[in-house]
Image 1: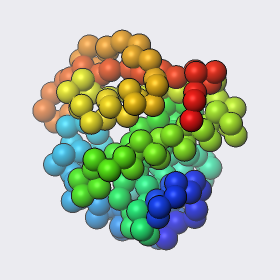
Image 2: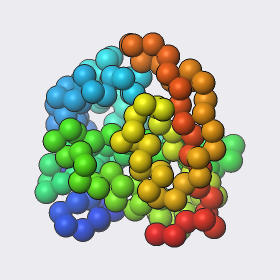
Image 3: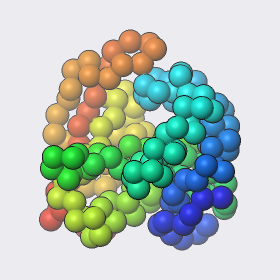
Amino acid sequence: MSRPFLDLGDGLEVRRLDPADVEELQRVIDENRERLRMWMWWADGSTIDTTRDFVQAAIDGDKLDPLAIVADDALVGVIGADASPITGNHEIGYWISSSHEGRGIVRRACAALISHLFEVVRCHRIVITAGTENVRSRAIPERLGFTHEGTLREAGRSPLGYHDIEVYGLLEHEWRP
């Protein structure tokens, strides 16, 4: 299993992915593909090779995207923070297996990653976007104190067509872990 990164307590961790994690990650993607495909543009085209390349690119670039969400030593989802090369601000994305939905795991992983970005990376602003109809995903930034900044009309695309995207932002001085 991958390298420890953020300990969330209660058997939950956010870990850096290693090449050895690719098969398990792909298995979780395959098991959740139908529900991911509406919101994650990459879900339909995800293969063992594309997943391996994504993980390797993160390792090679020392990126915080993707990171594994781990519950009791099992990979159950992914979180990541992608930096803007111009501003140094970050956008966080996440998904979790349906078997672990509704337990507050993503909220806890996001909170830990947000603290890391503000306190260690010295990021000034974090953005989270979610499809307007993706109620569970939108609840995360709302519960973490992000400000709803607007709607990007038909900015998201899935195999089912275009959909609106909600944008949430959080500034460093607004964060209260």
